[in-house]
Image (cartoon, rainbow, N blue to C red; front, side, top):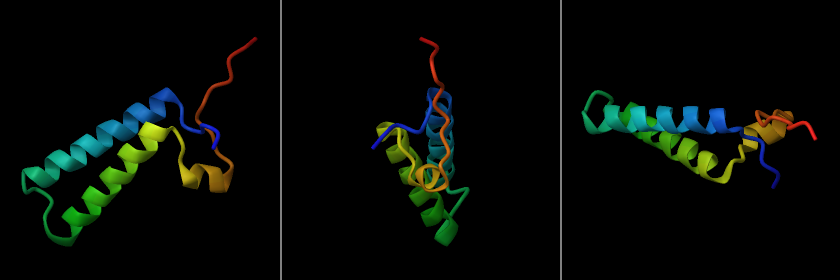
Amino acid sequence: MKKNLGNADRIIRLCIAGLLAVLWFQNIITGIWGIVALAVAAVFVLTSLVSWCPLYAMFGLKSTSKKPV
């Protein structure tokens, strides 16, 4: 697996995951929407940690930057 997530994308995903988790723990998002929010948060954390997103790979997208040599 080649990395296809850049640092900015990873940070944004972690922030969104944290926000979703806080909203769930504060009972702002409850029920089925709360479960969906936690699942999305878990996927965002996982993809941020491994720097690879399967949807990006499927569509041929990359948010990594090429450094000049």
